[in-house]
Length: 429
Image (cartoon, rainbow, N blue to C red):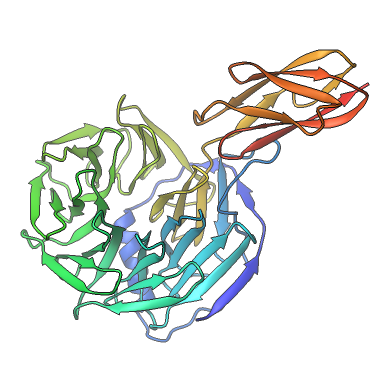
């Protein structure tokens, strides 16, 4: 095991929208580049900056985007997921490392996979608390413990695992894009593969709300596979391959129709429908909690409400290009890899503001603080660092009454349930 610890700080950039190409093409090309020359190495050029897995506000409102460049040039970041401790895990498609950003130490750690040039792709949190990742050109699936111990499991020869997810049956399930199969891997390493009936390569896979696994294909179909291995394919009725897939709050599966400006949905009974969106080439789809899905389109990251069908293009960080995989972080923000710009980016959903931002009171005098937050989180709270100087009490919906008690200075801290905070300095005369 090779571990590299790197300490660095957050780099923040403003928003800019750019256009670009297909996520799936980017991901596969990065994998291919990583395997083009066995034993090839990439020289390290400088150290980038990284964000903590909890992009938390601890003062004035941050910008909407946080960008964390990879610690090594041309590493080809692809897969991304959060673990049960809310660390963020990333795969390097070119260099064969699995990376972790540790919130306890703010260190970026790289763990080298034993196989040379494995062309890493997706990564997911397993049912055993470990992280599982695919090695597309090495025909393997890897497991890494939270401490960084890696074990590799060989798949049948010529396999090409791409996406991977934890199944409701306690196994790992992956798409085999080279053999046109869906694979099942137990946590002990026992492999079973099931051929896709249409002999079409599968792309993304996710656990459905019905106890089955659902996956998209390189054709106009969505399919499900039972834990026993029975596959049923459903036609979308449109001339487009299907791409990213996620479960919505409505209990349906939502997927991108990458050649069309549409999001598709399928019920667990197999009823398919298609929804026009104002974004080109939807690819990755992630459940953002509540009724909100997040979708990657050519115009940038976008949000989609499965109840109202409202669609909003959010854009990209400055200098960014369309990205690879996405994940919902433990901080409630959307994390995604950007292979062509070699960084991890975060869309900060919850930005807390308080007005006024400071107070000067006399003993016995009262003032009102009004708090707002983007993202629609739950009711906010507030606490005083020294109630003997100034006390605080709820006054209404996200408003607070501050009362000067005695001469001195203290801080009133407004916070949400994700531990974003906004400190308001108070002076009592």
